[in-house]
Every structure is written in C-alpha cells, then in structure tokens.
Length: 334
Ligand code: KDO
Image (cartoon, rainbow, N blue to C red):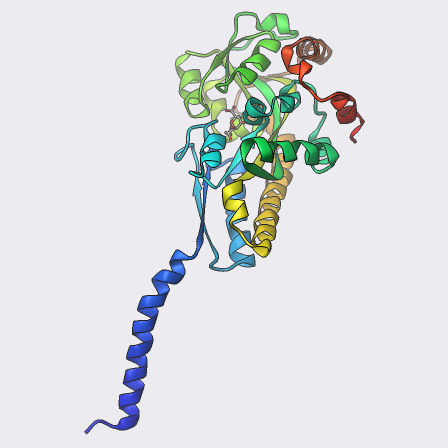
C-alpha cells in the first residue's frame, strides 16, 4: 500500500516538474533580446566593452535581458547599423559621427579633422549642452537614442611603405583607405591623399596585397586588427579625435520600463567608461610597441596639417549647415 505521505510528496514533485516545464520556457521568452552589431575585432576595447555591458545588466537586472554580441560586422555590415536599428532589426550598436552626419547634417562638425582636442574635451562636449541638443535631433531623425560616448581614439596615418610625410602635399597620390561614405572620403582628401572606400574587415588584406597604400585608425585599432603586420610606418597626424556612440533603437528603448531604461543606460555608460580608460592608457604605450615591431613612427608638421584640413572644412558645404556658433562653443569646452 502506498504511504499517503509518499504519495502526496510524489504528486507534489510531479506537479512541480510539470509546472516548471510549462513556466520555464515561457519565462525565458519574456527576456528582452538585445542584439548588438559592431565591426570591432574581438581584441579591441570597443568590442570588449560589450561584455562589460552584458555583465552589468546581468548584475543589475538578472534574467531580464538576453544580450547577444556580434563582432566583426558578422550581423550587419559596417555603416548599415543605423538603418537596421531604425527598421527595428537591430537593438544596439556603436555608431560614428560619420553615420550620424548622413541623416543629421549638422553632426558633420564632428567629422571634421582637428575639431575636437582630446578625449576629455570629447566627453565634456557630448555630456554637456551641445551633446544634449544634438542627441535630441539624432533621436528624432534617426529613431535611435545615444546612451554613452565612447572614445575610439585619435586617428593616425598608417602606411604600407615608408614615406617622408611632412605636409598634406606629401600625401599626393597616396591611395588612402577610408570607411565607405562621402563624409569619410572627404576627410581623406582633406589630408591630401587619394581616398578610397573599403570596409574595415577588408583593410588587412588590402594592405597586404597593396590594393591600398595606407589606412587611418587610432593606434589601439592598428594593434588589435594587426595592421602593423602589413605596414611599415605610422605618421602621427592625430587628425581626428574619434568618437562612437552607444545607441539603442527607440523601438527597443521605448518598450522598456523606467527601471530597465535606467539600467540599460547605466550599463552602456559602464561599458564606455571601461573602453575610455583602457584605450587612453594603451594609446600612450603603443608608439613603443610599434617601434619594437619594426615600424617607423614619425611626426609630421602638425601646424601644416591642421591649417590645411581646417581650411578645407571651413570652406566646404559641410560647414554651411553647422549650427551657428558651434565651433566657438566646442572650442570653449574644456
Ligand atoms: C574604420 O573603419 O576605420 C573604423 O575605425 C570606423 C569607425 O567608425 C568604426 O566603425 C571602427 O572602424 C570599427 O568599430 C572597427 O574598429
């Protein structure tokens, strides 16, 4: 005969198992999926920062989010992320000033060479009134919300063969790879080179085979993507204090409750802070690293580059749509 207490225990256990079988998958389904797409290579700080984002959310909102990190442009091609987010096909990405300028022309002020001085000023610009005003327009026109400003580093020239580069005139005829948009190509031309578009993922091979003569990127990315293996020189032009913005599609952001919005924002800011701290630290050490790798690291006539590039931008159509007084406001930001 079955002991009544055993029976009821078994029944309860069975019932519990049946219940969990029913409720566990449905609980899993209620997790909010956050897909991230970036062209960043795994060893670069703005790739690693997404793990910081994921871990921060796991801690602040356990089990609420399913964060999926897609590196190497494996989910969306470089530069197509904003459109994917606006369509609701992608939740998060890090978008560049160049991506933004396509739809928010006044943002092209941040695509201009020698505009932002350093990473501290960059943070102060985007965390202050200028950032607030422009991000509002970004949200309205692009249907994405910028959550944090990421210092991508200061862009330098990186050449396949050693060349005596002092002024922009010395770059005449140099086939300089730039990312694929007219705003990027304009920067390459402003530097004096012949700009040619290529996706980040194809640059290593382009340098190796000689279809391009050089590329420009911040030193940590030159290291992480191993461009130093297929180039012989770095010219420290420091032509762009580059930033990318962790952005979430408005569709996804608006679907979150207030507490979740706050947690996602905090996680994005923690990720950016992790990147910024590590990137600034590494940037200061990399000249030595590249020299040890056998590259020549040279400094051009920076005044000549600054003057030429700034003049090219000031006289361009881009400057015509910059908000009145913005250059002065940027310059006045510490
Ligand atoms: C690049 O293609 O050179 C660039 O540096 C442009 C940036 O806006 C950003 O897309 C970056 O690549 C990728 O994240 C790879 O580091």
